[in-house]
Each structure stands twice: as structure tokens, then as C-alpha cells.
Image (cartoon, rainbow, N blue to C red; front, side, top):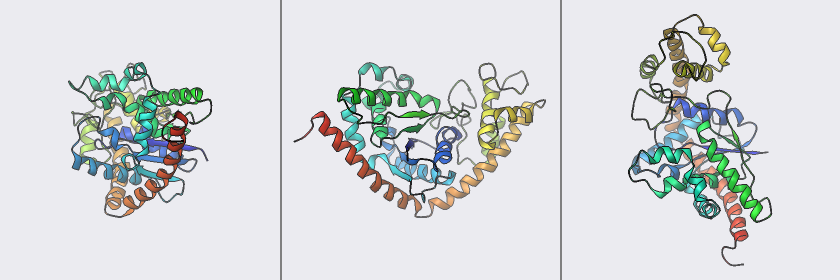
Length: 330
């Protein structure tokens, strides 16, 4: 069975964009692949984190995964925390020594995030290599991702191919990104030229998976559209309306064309009201599941099993690779 791997940083509350670009893909594919779903808490510390809040966000992220429909009772589903497996960091250093400065300096997210901080850490610059290690440790063939993370998967591909060529064998599986045809990038409700972010400074910009219905309604009804008052999917000329149509498509599980037809001839208010209903219904179910899961022992049971299973695989891969490059004794 081919392997699929993905993760979402526990650096804040997860949004409907995280669901659309990542979580939903795992749910859709969990019957078809051996799935590695992890919490990349080490990535979160590229910027300063409150330790207690980070602990809380890690558990909450796992709770949300499960509440959305990730089935940890399946023998092919492995949920784990990145920092509980030391081989991620070990392989990352080895891969840094096979990665060029120019490659990292061209990463889009580094360029964007470094502008937000007068002093940023080396970790912000090198964490794409850690992301490559996360993937390559497990020979994952497929990596579900939003469009904004595609470049990171491409870096992992480049590193894997370079290593395999240099040492003349297929030591790493070369991963492939899996990008959803609809919902790969959910946009900011107040500025649809930007991606919806879980770390946004504007509370009106993002819908979080744990937002109550009254908050969801307020955010959606206040979402930016345009003055044309015509329902149409046109991401270039009508980004706000197109974003609302995309969200509806994802959560109602309807093709974009069907959503446009449903609201064609109506006003933006009709689209927004319909979207509020769809989101509230879907997220209420997720939130009910989440509240039950967070008071049960299922999270620790899943994480313990995932840690033990993945550590064995990671250790075997790392031991092979370190000997290939000449580390340690013969």
C-alpha cells in the first residue's frame, strides 16, 4: 500500500482553509493509503511560542483531526507528534548538508514571513528542510497540500533526487504533491488577495473550525465581495465572491458549477446566508465530536500508538542513510 503523509502546524486554531486544503484530503484518502498524519510542533517554533499554549494547541489539533473524520481505528492510520521522534531532526541536519542556500532563499513563505519580523531565526530559513525530512523519513509517495505548500514538496523532491543520484541508489522515494482541484487555497474573508490564515491579526478574516454559529454568521455576512452584485466564479476579477463559492463547494460537496447555478440570479446576501447554513451545519457536527473526543482518552491512545509505530520506521531509515553518507563507525 502506497504511503500518504501530511501535517498541520499547531500554531493557532485551525481554519476552514486548513480543513479544505489538508484535513479533508486525508479523510478522502484514508481508505486508499497507509496514512501518516503528524503534528509538526517543531515547525511552530520558527517563531516564539507560549509553551503552555503550544501544548494545548497540539492536543487540540489532534482532536480536530479526529472530530473531522480521521479514523484512528484503521490499522493503516498513524497519528503522531513530530518532536516525539528524534529522527526527524537528525535527518533534517543530514539533508541540510545536501541542500543549497539558493534553494532556501527562494522559498516563498520564507520571503513573506521574514518581512513580518525585524529579527527572524535561522529556523525560519531552514525549516523547509525539516519538512523534507518529515516526508522522506517514511518513503511517502503522496503529500496532500494546499497550493501555497507545493513549493515545499518540490524541495523535498529535489533533495531526494539529488541524494539518490549522488549515492547512486533509490534511498528515498520521490514524493508527489496532491492538490485538491477545488479548495486548495481558501482566501482571507476581508482581503481575498491573501490566503486565509490561522494566525491572522484580523479576527474577521478567518473562519475557525471551532467558531460558534453566531460568530460564523457574522464573519461570512461581513465578507468582502464587490459592487457588481452578480454571482459568478471568476477568481481574477471577483476574488471575494469566488472565495465564498469555493467554500460552499467544499463544505456542501457540490461542484462549483452547481453552486453558481444554485445562486445565479440572486444577490450576494443569498449566497452568504446559504453559506452560513452549510458551514454552521457542518461545523456544529465537528464541534460536537471534538468536545467528546477532548474528554476521552482516544487522543493519547492514538498518539502513543503512532509514536511507537513511526519511530521504528524512522530509525531504520535514518540508520540506513547515515551509513550511506559515512557517519559513525563501520
